[in-house]
Length: 356
Image (cartoon, rainbow, N blue to C red; front, side, top):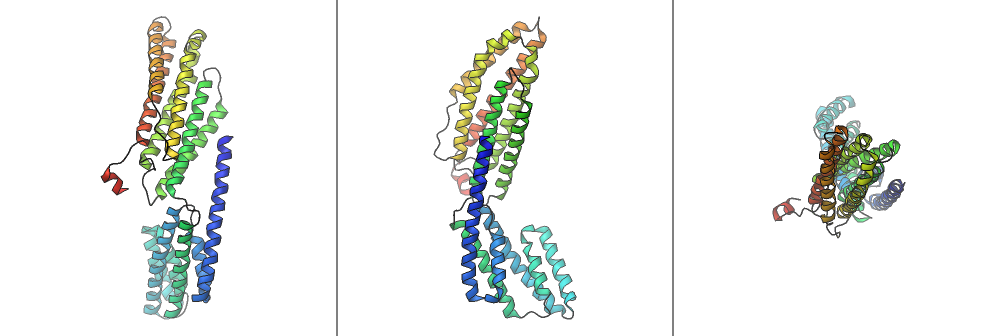
């Protein structure tokens, strides 16, 4: 419920932010283009609307693609119209074919086809009219891009941080379910957490792909490394979860009660460490979480599980196998937690920093 409420609040802020950017850019474009090229005002306003994205990175990409596409489309449309002459169809077909071929290779230039088609549909477009239209397109695009950077901006890196924080919170929730899984199954809750995690992971991946200005979190960690680390941690938790749920039936109640304090300590230390990783992923001021407690708790749990497995190996082989599976799950979870912590706390050297 908390995760759903946080997602809803974030969506509301995003809607409000895009609305403010759109309103400010539309007003500025209207006032300016109405003075310099009122006949082409609609082109300028449309350019604003198609430029503004949900992040500054996306807005920048949209703006660059729109400016380049409009320029290429105008050039192709004018050449096709003036070179071939005659009926409109003679210029339209080659213009849209050529520009669509370009768009097939570079999808970001898709606006080239629209511009080329509009110009080709005019019998013999005047150069002054074409220049006026291009000015309106360029002005609207530039104003839209400026609004994305000046009015409540948000970079894609920040969107990656939020998605990673959500995914790590899902990991922490699964950890709580694993602890409860010693005594009961919660299939519906597990399915819900798994579905949320996949959504947050895909959102993080998509936002990494849209990033244009920084390939690293503010902590210094590479965005792609951080996403891969979170995914690996989730897989380790799945292994531990299955070991607990599928093998616990082979473990006697007395043994479970004996292991309970160790399991509680491992869960508590892992949850605390996860909380620290969430803070690192979402805030540059966060301090690195201490791993001593986690390492000590998992070491004690592994030793006790191995000791019990050796003791039960001859008389109770199924219980010994279940204990070994649990030990493997604990070991893998600790390994991935520490690996993710190392990735998130990475500080790039001078060469790496200049590249990002």
